[in-house]
Amino acid sequence: MTAEVTAPFDSTSIDIVDPGVYAAGGIPHEAFAWLRHNDPIHRHSYEDGDFWAVTRYDDVVTMTRDWETYSSHQFVNLPDLSDEAKAVRRSIIETDPPAHARLRKLAMPPFTLRKVADYEAATRKITNTLLTAAGELGTIDIVDAISAPLPIQVIVNILGVPSEDANFMVELSDFLVAGADSDLPADSFGNTTPVELLPFNSPAAHALFEYGKKLGDERRVNPHEDVVSYLVHSEVEGERLSENEFANFFQVLVFAGNETTRTAISNGLHAFMQNPEQLDKLYAHPELLENALEEIIRYATPVLHMRRTTTKDTVLGGQEIAAGDKVVMWYASSNFDENFFEDPLKFDISRPPRPKHLAFGAQGPHHCIGASLARLEIRILLEEMIKRQVRLEPAGNIVRARSNFVNGVLNLPASITLAS
Image (tube, rainbow, N blue to C red; front, side, top):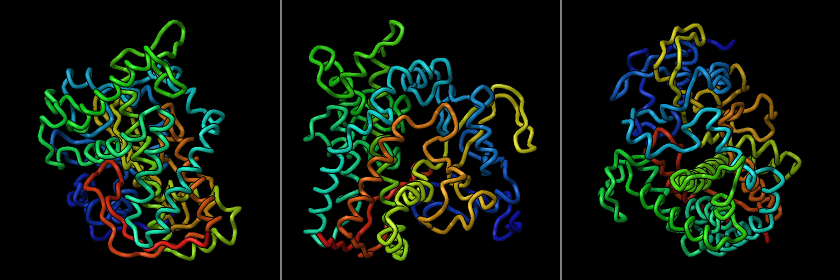
């Protein structure tokens, strides 16, 4: 057991929900360390009521596996929603078994390990095109040049979104991350829906929903060899996705398929720039690639938290929790738990793959459908970096997203050189 962390916090001064904290310095590791050692199931104030902040690895694993006690049905973000908003916004993320299992059966086949392997050639071509263009520029914003276009080009390619709309998908995802802080007018993109009924309270969610609905309607009549066509025609035991279920699924796939992988790549390349000896180690020992991939995901922790709501009185980590309470799993803390990860704040590509990090909702029914695709994209990027001996050096300061939900990076200036 590691030593107790005492300063500079107390139970009343902790604030792990202020988006400005994450914009200013990324994950507030000192605050989370204090919580893990002093108040691991912490009653945290919030604008519409308190919630329990769960910060230790073991406790997060318990919640992740026990969906019957810790339900997703009341939605997974911190703010409470009206019943009307829940009905409109509900996706696979906000369902419990058996409804969750039904949606997963309908949507999972295009994202199995075997199927994802079919996307390798296209992903490698996209990756090399981006690296070549970046090398020709010399000085780049890594987000604009690599980490944003790579996952969105891959996901739109397999979904069947026209390539000319890829930048529009990135734009909408950016607005979703910013949420209400984007100052986007409520009627943007022709939106007439009250923003409280939209994911992230953003009219960009309306635009993404409508885009998906239109594409789905087209593929119902004229199917292609793409994931959208599969989803609108998928059938399990005589059931298909409803129009609303499909549109919400499309929104989740574009956002999650873009933003989480983009965030992992941005933070991973930033970590390599801060720790160039780790990039040297990868190039000298390419057999560490899989370790490096998992370390990037752990270190980046693309999604910072997920909320659950208790269905009954329970006890977690010695703390009594009442039925109906908000209980929030902080991956931003559990992935850096000193009792499971040696020297957790160190970026170490030779770190053993066990214990598993908890990014992508590992170890429970809500394990991310697109996790295999995200790993494919990061693995191929690392493989091509090794082949081409890519070198990165900082060329300015990192700019982080003002979000307590996504560990996003808006800008990451760098100088880049390629040996080939």
